[in-house]
Amino acid sequence: MTQLKKQRPEFRNINAFTDLTTYRLPPAGWVSILHRVSGLLMFVLMPFIIWMFDKSVSSEISYNYLTSAFVDGVSVYPGWFLKLVALALIWAYLHHFTAGVRHLYMDATHSVTKSFGKSSALATLVIGFGLTAILGAKLFGLY
Image (cartoon, rainbow, N blue to C red; front, top):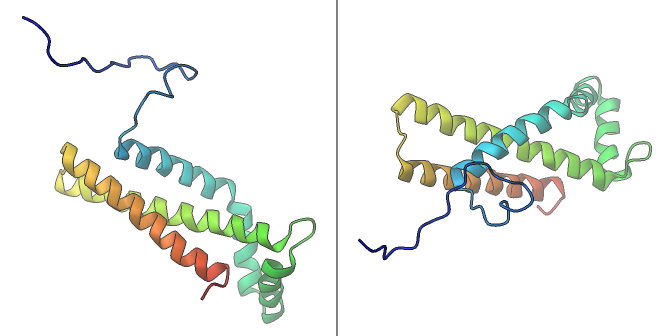
């Protein structure tokens, strides 16, 4: 029997230096990795979240201080940098939320087919990045 079809490479132990350039991760894999990254990002930036929440609800003066921090900056951090950190938090929350809803839906409906995994992963990525772009435009004053 002859083999007419080219055999796809099988990766059992991925070497970070030689195999990662040729390895294609499916969309569901990207969503899974980004779900973990977004959770870690929210955890690491928790002090920034608490600082923003404290400044926004303490008083009107502290709220004005918070809003001016995004323009003038705080200490050695310029305002644009604080906006980028806030945008990273916006992305982390939105992606983590949409990926979590995807996982909950898949668990509740037992939708574990390959085609549904790919389409729901692509929808998760589009929704997460789309909402981030909309809220990022608002954050940077485009509308």
